[in-house]
Length: 185
Image 1 (cartoon, rainbow, N blue to C red):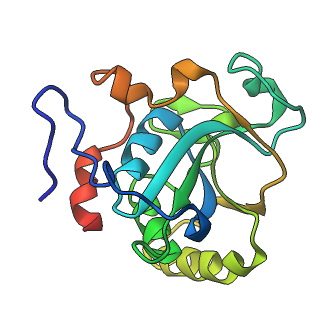
Image 2 (image 1 turned 180 degrees about the horizontal axis):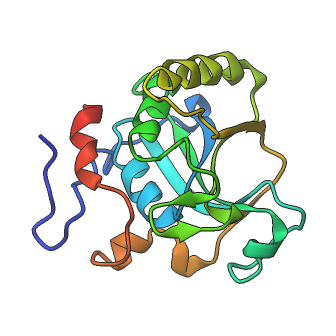
């Protein structure tokens, strides 16, 4: 069972205090609606060394939060993980637990292209794993999965106040159920 901090609804982070070998870390970019909750969830999966929120695959460089409804960017979490501790397959399966992959440009109460779901990669070797997970997840739905799977074209780090937002604002808005972390263990 996941431990929860005494002072917030956020589960404890099992990655704190682990010295990850930077040379072994891999990367994936995941868009699942408002990035605040997605980051808090992904950061707490054992083997995730680092997360950062930002804007991916839009038409401009370095957009601001106010601009992204018009630039085609998706609110995205950049995940650096240790594949010896968590596989890409397990990470993606956990990601699918917190999104509605059949919803176009909407997650929870949030609507707009910036809230679409997506899996963005740099390493073409990740694509077969991504496709296999999407195919397995599709078996759970009557509707077609619309989560986009694309190479990462660009990523801009979001403003500082968005980084680790729920760590700084534990009662802040979160459209996902963080107790789903128990199902990733």
